Amino acid sequence: MTYRDVATRPVLTWACTALGARLPVAMAPLALVFLVRDRPGGYSLGAALASVYVLGEIVGAPLLGLRLRPGRARRHLTAGLLAGAAAFAGLGLLPRAPGAALAAFAFLAGAAPAAAAGGLRTLLTELVPERSVAQALSVESILTSGVWAVSPATVTGLALGAAPRIPLLLAAGLMAASAAGLRLLPAGWGGKGGPAVPGAAREPVLRVLAAAWPVYVTGAAGLTLLGLAEIVLPALLEQRGIGVGWAGPLLVGLAVGSAAGALLYGLRSWPGLSRTRSAVLLCGTSLCVVWVALIPGTAAIAAGLTVGGMLQSGALLTRNLALREALPPGALAAGYSVMYAVAGAGYAASGGLAGVLLDVAAPSTAILSGVGLTLALTAAGWYGETRRGPGPRGAVPAPGVRSPGAVPAPGTPLPNPAPAPAAEGPPVGGRGDAEGRL
Image (cartoon, rainbow, N blue to C red):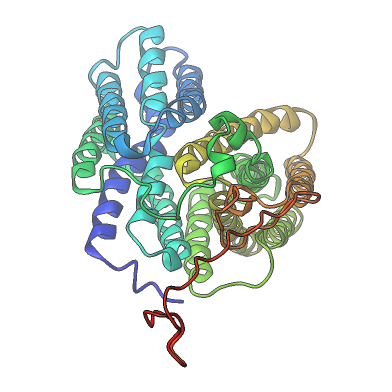
């Protein structure tokens, strides 16, 4: 397995478009804090605006993702990105507006383009052969890791070196450019993956998405764990007697490890079932975070975060591939959007959990509590997948329809195959039927 099928001009165009859509998302929380930090109670207001922004993402991703239609996806994504660009521009142009107005802009900036993550991921899989989907998703993960690695330094440098409004105006320009870049990509998707499974196609979309809940649970588990580790990291460094200034370089190492893990995952096919690989990788990530919590020293913490990032990116890739197996092609974009919302909710919950735990326990204890929660979520998701069985791509087809890899449910009568039409005329010796087709 190689990345040869991914190294194409359409994928490069997609990468530039995705960069414009995702860098503003990574920049937004910190940029909102810098925007209002000079106002009375600025840090509290900035934290509230960042929370409202994340809430907008959590609400907008499933609601707008469910409205995406394969044939008109580009139109919907463009409208969402342009609305998000307008909201970012409003924040940058009106930094002294009342807090309620800034909160409205922040909510719109988070909600309007929230379906772009799932839509762009689905578009990416349309640009590569089916055999290279894992490599394409690895490239997406590498791009995302790079975005999250450079965004803090970008926001800090622009806010302190130029003006606090500049990062938000840059975010507006990038998002508008991403909307323009969509014109160079396919108008929608649905040409791959074969015909939708007849039984699943008649099911309501919400029911189809809800049936994949174990994938969402395990997908959010690893992100919640490392999100908690990131939030508690400054306090942990103080507990260890290490300068808090090391938090930035250590988190960059985490992002670099995530990119390296995604690259390595796409270089070959891995043995075992998807749910088993995911559980093993999440358990490995948990061990790395336990190492970070218990072993003192900057080098040890850096090693734990870097290796944990590598394993976590592999776990997230298995979840994206598992979701692709669990949902019919027409529901994939909505499924990715729901995954995005669940991950955002998990990350937000980890922040709240960190705030509660740090009031009553040491930072290392707070991290270990997060490990316990992650392992519980991993076990629940794994058990749910074992009980769920094959998804729509492996469901029992209607009579007369054969689906590759279909597994009948217990007790389901197998359809009788239609008899083959009788050949007209005598068969040709050694050539199959009368017309020599076989």
